[in-house]
Amino acid sequence: MHLATFVHDQPLDLACLAIERVAVRGVLFRGDELLLLGSRHGDYKFPGGGVEPGETLQTALQREFLEECGLREVAVGERLGDTVEYARSADPAYEVFKMTSHYFACTSRATPTGVQQLETYEANLELEPRWVTVEQALEANRAVLASGVGVMRWLTRETKALEMLFS
Image 1 (cartoon, one colour):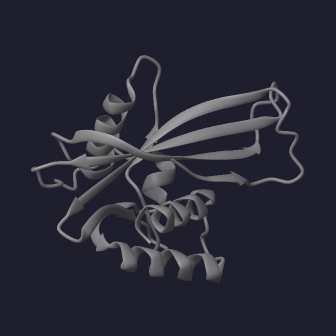
Image 2 (cartoon, one colour):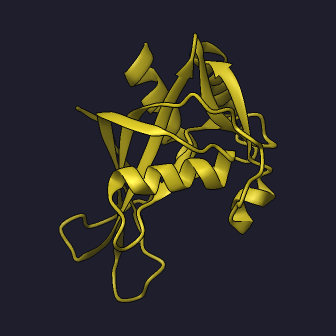
C-alpha cells in the first residue's frame, strides 16, 4: 500500500537523474502502545533508517532497532506500506534526492535496553525509545508541526504514516 508521496523542496524536476536511498521503519506494538522514538521537541518517529549495502530490508530494520532502541530479537513481519520523499540533493552530481521508506509490522518479546548507538543528529535530537499510544503520538506530532519549532522533514512523513496506518 502506498501511504504518501512528499516533495519537500520546490521547484524540483522529478524526471531528472536522482540519487536514491531505501529506508525501513518498524511498527511494533505492546498492547495498545507503539514503540516510537521521542525527540527533545516532543514529537515521535518510527524506529528505522537507511538500508546499508548488502543488507536485506529485514536485517536493516533489526540493526536499526538495536541501534536506536537497544532492542534485540525483533521479528520483521508483513510490509504495511511505503512512502516516497523527494528533496533537493546535497550531492552536486544529482538534482534530486529520492527516499523510499518501507514500513513493516514487527514483534519482539525482548525489552528495549535503552543502550543506544545514535548518529550525531539523532543524539542532538535526544531520541529516546518510548511506548505511547497512536493517539498520543499523533497529538504530539501535530502540535510540533503547528508550532514550527524543531520540525524535521521526517515529521510530516511520520505523522502521515501514523494517520494512514491507524486512523
